[in-house]
Image 1 (cartoon, helix red, strand yellow):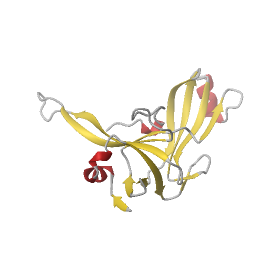
Image 2 (cartoon, rainbow, N blue to C red):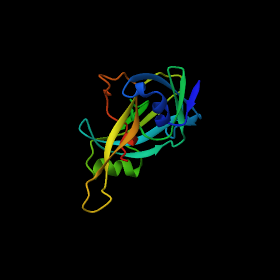
Image 3 (cartoon, rainbow, N blue to C red):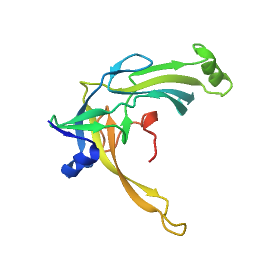
Length: 183
């Protein structure tokens, strides 16, 4: 199996894989999530705030930072450390209302902040499971070098991973909270 240090080096040798839907698996160091203690190679835990049935906000409680690998077509092993957007269903999900809230902070968020409910959510990538991925090139702009100059267009290779198939190369669900980053 050929190994690559990152997505960029993989795409340099395999440009035909850009924007293609790939079936992948993950590999790496075994980690345990903080909340459920589930074994995985990547996780993020968030506290979601709801107004009615709509997520009005969230706070990232924790996420792993260890690199892991994606296995593409059982031929390529690519190291992933950052530059990904995850579209996963939570593996662990527990809702809280006034009736079952625990801790002073949960109770305060529900009463003083006016949220209708809260939810602990854990998202993770687990060995042995098949995921779907697309490697994309996203565009962003850098500030001009001189005050009177124009912003400079730049590109960044990003890995999208979903636990459901993509529809026309687009994910069908929302990004996980930690996937909401900027460059």
